[in-house]
Amino acid sequence: MDIQKITTFLDLVETKNYSKTTERLYTTQGNISKQIIALEKELETTLFLRKHRQVELTEEARLILPYIQTIHTQYQSLLHSLKDYKQQKAATLYVLTIPTMANYWAFDQLTTFMKQHPEFDIQLKEGEGNELVPFLDTGENHFIFVRTFQKEQQLDTLVTEKDHFVAVLSKNHPLAQRESIHLSELQQEEFLMLSKETKTYQPILDLCHKAGFTPDITFETSRIELLLNMVASELGVSLVMEKTIDSRWKNELAVVPLTPNKTSYLAFIRGKEKGNLAADTFWQFLKEQFNHSKLE
Picture (cartoon, helix red, strand yellow):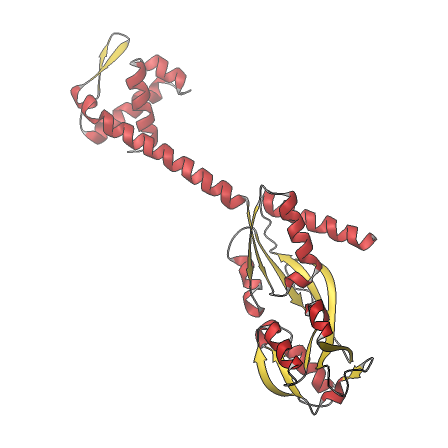
């Protein structure tokens, strides 16, 4: 039993006239007859009796009418619920971001967009490393904010700013007052590292190897606050991206420029598969804001 047969049946119950139902449903009388005959065949009963230009319901039709009305009402409710769900989904943006996003330009622009476009809902979630790029393929309207050391291929990327490594030392460290440090000067130190998932781990190893040594790594964590607390407690030294250090830490730690160094790029990325209005509006906003910031 399909919904077209049900709709035809209910309209004919109301009009009791094939011609009027034909007009109301924008179809032909032959098609109306075909729908009713098919329904009668499916139910194995006669539903209407023709009397001149009018029709009358049979007893069987009166019996099934409440059930047919319920099916039709539930189907309409289903359509409305599905429409509401699709509209809500279309108006929702999903952003997976590195935990230190709040330290970057991107966070200010994200909050500005949310204020300017209250009609869109943004679901923000933290992630790291290898889970970021695959997130783009898990649904529509998905974006990521990442740190990368090279531009991603086959992806729509908007680089928002750059960052670089600095040495983070305790205030009492012998090199704390230096204007800059060559990485080789830290080869005897114990290194406190952000974990491999942060994508800064391997670049740090590469820099140390370039400086002629392998670092003595005594601790790893994904939490930068814990890492900086440990450095402040003189448990070791660390290399982190400069902008990930909140300003309050700069009174408790020595943050010293470093050579050799490596530049990282902070970027919003969306999949090549374009989204809908919400996704396109967000992407256009970011491009406009980024172009404006370059002019200032």
